[in-house]
Image 1 (cartoon, rainbow, N blue to C red):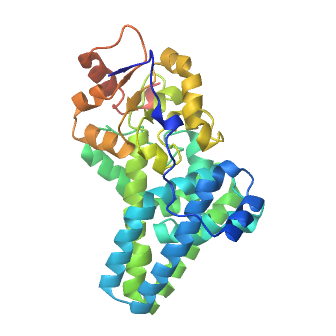
Image 2: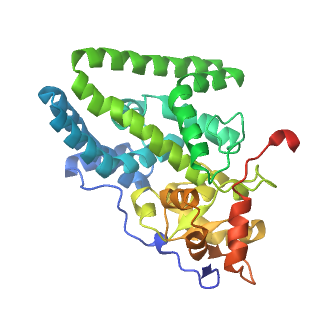
Length: 350
């Protein structure tokens, strides 16, 4: 249980780990001339790495058409790029990388389907719906509010709803909110993805399964467990407050792989803040975290927090809890605090 006095935040100076290799000098110069903010070069390098490795790998699977080639490709892509790409797409959706709309479209339209995200759909789901509605049920169709969030069966329902219903709920959400152009756009994205999958499956069922269909299934699980974990501690007394509907994770290698995604609370406070600024912004605003009784953990990642909650390992969580107030809470008080933020929120009674 860390104390705020002399709190060390290693994320501020840690070496970035989002990409594997640099492009040739002439390509690097092109990227630097084309980008809006050179702080985004790690993100651009990541997309370049994926273009060089994932796309040829997928083409090889279609050429060979074997389950062995497909399985090898899927596992390599999953463990090398899946998490990095998802969070790279996340921050690139909030702040465009390039001056050219064609270059900005490369990740959300060309690369996304190789990671189980239909072309063009992420921006509507995350930036338009999730951040605007801010986890409020029922408008945020991925809201965690109605669930008992240490109950695995509740998570299973949450995931299955997304897996089977998001294709219809997302365009319908935009339509109900009066965003009819976005609703039509979203429906077209879904229909286009399904149509492409149909024809690709007819042409090469084995390759389509490994390259597109299985990643779509796995990505749905990872996205939903990630969002579940990020919004697992929601204060029923102040569910609309950013400091009470999510939390931060500091001092973890996750932040160097995922563009400081552990600072999810900080990101909700100002969604367009540059990802490189999040650790320092957290430290500058620590008094606000103290005032709001915000939850912060050290040395974990979101998936670990989600699993610890599902298995009800509150003592482990208490040991990683960053003490923000003085006098500090004892372990029993921390466990009580965390449990109180896992209960379903019924807005009709508020």
